[in-house]
Image (tube, rainbow, N blue to C red; front, side, top):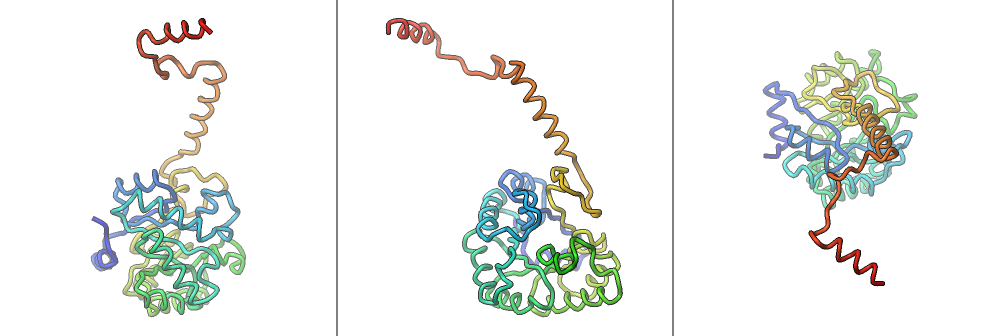
Length: 281
């Protein structure tokens, strides 16, 4: 049965960890649901993991909606979060509400996520007031990595940690049902978790959070461009895929594939009829 925000709140209150990954396509989401994931995020990280962009800024609403639809079809019993891409909510409160609504109407997500602290609280409040669930996202926020000086850990000084804590408190007051904290020291994440009543989740922010998110392409060892410090590869499918592709190339070039067992036979007697028909022409 699909979990709700109340299940996630209960899990926090009882100390049970929430486990989730990103998913961008039907096969991955289907397998993730069978494995028992609590949530799936259709992240704008699809820009890098699927489309090969250098970052997330080029990702569009249309791309996000398309991938959310596929994930929803594959995982009907899993809580799905749509990630609002760059400029889908920063431009105005009205745009934020409209685009959040599109995620729900078109892709039937259960919630949306957006990046930023106090500066996006008006958008968070308006979306929540519109009857939709909002997850906040603070720390390393890839859409504003230019302002952060690149993809760097955040909250490593007292000053910046206090800013993150203030952001988290403001996000909760604005009506978010949970917060994702990215690339922040575990001690700071724990303070945020203990300060808030809503669930606080981690991607690269330590074990003390109420749950953990990982990028599926990192977890499986498929993404090749770089590996963040906080990633644990539970498989090395990239190497296995390369090995399989190379074996396929070799067998085709040496006529070792396909073999008779990989082909179909004509109905008995039909080959003779075909040859006779061709000879009569």
